Length: 148
Image (cartoon, rainbow, N blue to C red; front, top):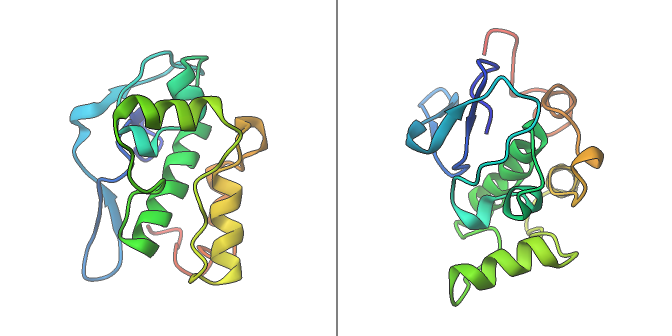
């Protein structure tokens, strides 16, 4: 997930800390890297949160972070990995990279949240919204302010 526009791409989407005022912060930048490039070609992070293009190593940018954020929202809603459990890492990589599947959207969340997750986890990175667009989405619009 992108680290505040400072050119840092964190490869682990599950390290989101929330304080008592509901401000989310990214943590554990041990798997992150500084990136001024438009596209990266390294694979770092936890497989169930990785975007298909990261696993395929076809080059990725900030839209991979949008996918990971969608997976974090799924995890927050279900307290489970976005894809459920896999027998081994290779099975997870094959499912994410080689199928047309997207992580299951939880049924117990609002329709707006289902839409938000669906936007974040579109298979084609070009079809995913950018962070600015997501901040205007109904799910985040009243949560985030310019001061955050």
